[in-house]
Length: 289
Figure 1: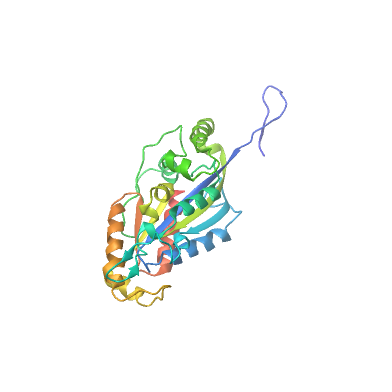
Figure 2: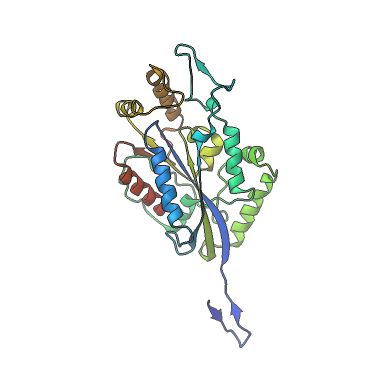
């Protein structure tokens, strides 16, 4: 602890403020691309580093939470399901097969109604210059303009906060966020970093989950490799003949087109070894922080 003495006045203690923030990491991808494997590897890694300095001197890893979109599929007998008449089979590849309201409400319960997002991109722009080398093919993350009065950006629309915040206090968060950012400099903040991992095949096709994620990864596979992996899996209920060709792949291509080309999403090659993907993702997160 440092002290200063000026003009023989009593000792004055200099202290650093502490801010608790959330880093939300999104992991999407094609079926059997390896998104669950990556999410579990990241969760294990982060849990092993809880309570320690995390990549930066003023950053301490606090909470680690993981939420998987697959846990929100509607029951088989739900009347909300879309049936593929030619196959007499449920279409599990659409947003309507998921209870996204429940997922988003669970996310809000984890974050709390006064959460602050850790804005990796703006902080990185503030302290680093130049482009970094990239080891895998994929678009460069978006580089937003730096606002010195708002280091922790508001990433998503207030109507989603209002909808999913059961406490009804979402409108207060942005004001508190900006006020806090104006009164504290980044260099003086000791930050408790909470990590939320969001994993799922449609998280970037839903406005709330997409915009909530600060760092976004999508794993892609070509048709042949994806088909081969899918045929080795058994689902409940099981796939019927023709389901992959008529539904799984066409729906994946449609959903992928909705966000393909976005500069804030890292597109990863699912054909390379999982360890290589993991190491690359960790380096991306580290560089962002």
